[in-house]
Length: 214
Image (cartoon, rainbow, N blue to C red; front, side, top):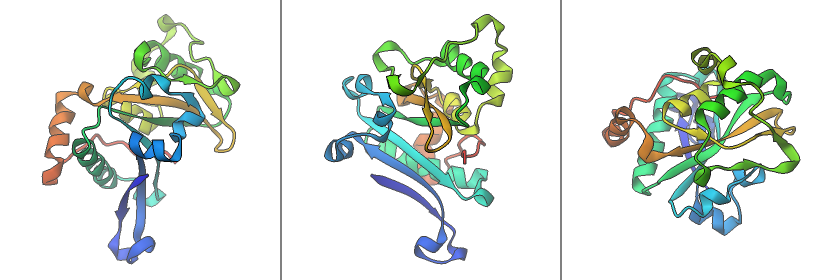
């Protein structure tokens, strides 16, 4: 995997200064190790077989005191450069709700299913042994705007970039999370974000103000 790393040089050099990371895995690299991490939770064969150049956005970590707009700007500026350099068509990965009781997220999961489900040809499906139905509340009963604002910041940020989600949530007991699979076609990003991606090489990338999940 490749890693985006943000360093605060006032804390020291090398590992002592690391305050934020993002793991990136291209298909070429995943083929060498045999899998994508997301493939442990979801059937991602639609993504692997669609012919697109795909990139997995792996676990992101930012020290709590550094979860600011400027740190996220640096992480996303680097990811934007990476997308351009390797001509990435689709980015994907897992976004999480904290906790393993999906009933607590019934409205949020239903909202994602009704409003942001990925098209069939690009739709990952949660593995059967941990699959959680997302379509548990009718679309008519949801107040979409309110639910969007209540989503975990990272998931909300992906949706604002134009992302979709796979079918089914996945209960990850080890990390105490309920996961959804995020799928983002880079050509669907709004003109605003395309402009920011293109400008990132000049150091002016300005992503939305959202923070990373713990």
